[in-house]
Length: 277
Image (cartoon, rainbow, N blue to C red; front, side):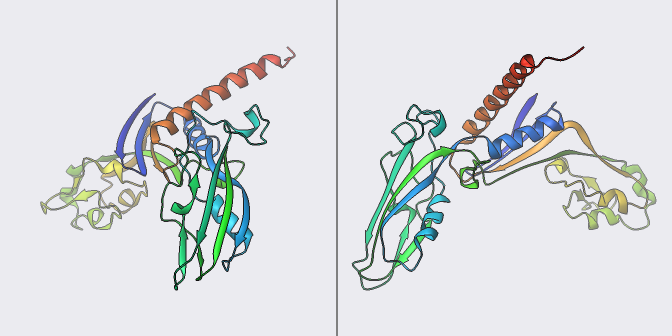
């Protein structure tokens, strides 16, 4: 297997994986979505709430605030020595106490949550939580724990992840000389993969595979049948959109750790099964 990073920003990662089966590509996607632990608020105690929102709505909003995660320090509650009752190894406390002393309504944001661990804080400081009127007050205690996406969406590691086949287009431009339509392909391609600036024959862009969606419109519309669209075997383009709870390096490393653990578990379970000859 080989992996090549195509594009990397703070919240987006695009890469190409080659020499893997589609089953493994799907396994990578599913592990990233549902198996990697991240921090999220799981328990809320509202001591004072003068806002117009019900306690349950505020609790729900707290649970969906992305929190930075430290997988080296914290354990899943079910794996902790405390048995999940809550201790410094599996739980983080976040408090919010705000009183509106102004004469205008005040917005409470995620930055108003104070964590007992500076490594576990809201990813973005300006996520709106609730609004309170003058002289109103909100006092909240919240407890965050590790969880996985298949238990609840608030524990999902990424905002979105998908993969697609690696496009492969074979273009025989020698057939374009007889085309009576001045290359309908270059005009109709929804992704603009062909350059017709020389006014003679279209040119397939060198990096067409980065944006080609395999819609087959060029192959279907070409009157001279000069284009054949297919895909590269065992090659996939992944795109991950993150909300910042974990670094991409950590996500990928943890993905393959979990994958190998599942393989070892499968081999172990298989050895326990008696197969009749």
